[in-house]
Length: 265
Image (tube, rainbow, N blue to C red; front, top):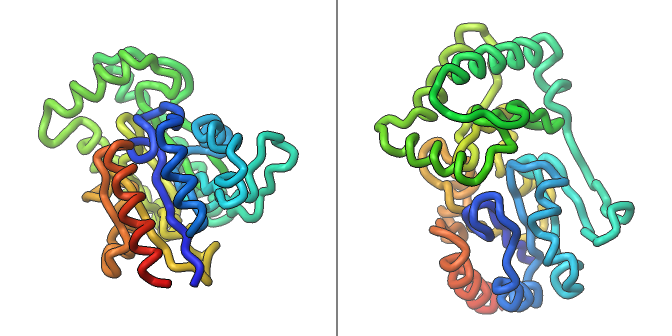
């Protein structure tokens, strides 16, 4: 029986927007002895590769590692230090799925909402809307915001109930319904942004790449509006999904999963 253990990235294998630490290497090498490893994230491929760069120097892990950016709507395998050897196995197009008219309406709506947000009290840095081919990420404070600005926003956001982001999430869902931009899923992404993609293109999408495997999952945002919820709920039924509070707990969970896999032999 083949197994693949799928991980979210930010908040699971790394602190938000940080690179993976060497301290996780030993337990991931142990995991690679019994299973394939997949990293499924809302981020794009270039950013994901930066975060996992340390893994690409370890041959035991690299040959078992699948990179699954944009919720797994893109599949890269086998990873390598050499970009030219990095093989894109499959991908899909959001524009083709929605149609150009709906896609354009959606982009105009996000620009309108960004204009509204710009009246808030936060510093704004870099670009705000990132179209990734199969998903859109909207980060109202800007994707190049400094760490202190991001933390200021997170602290401010969490001081209200519902949070500012939850209010904008409701607003986005309301206006997409009003403008009949249907067939979309809109979720909170990371600590400061929103992920927008066609229905069904959540992280469960990545499971179709591994039809002959038993699937396991570890993620940190498994509650309502979190971008790990769908895959967590699906695999939790079979006790093969785990919610983590961060890399330290993830290290412990990997050990439990290794034992669980060995018990199936």
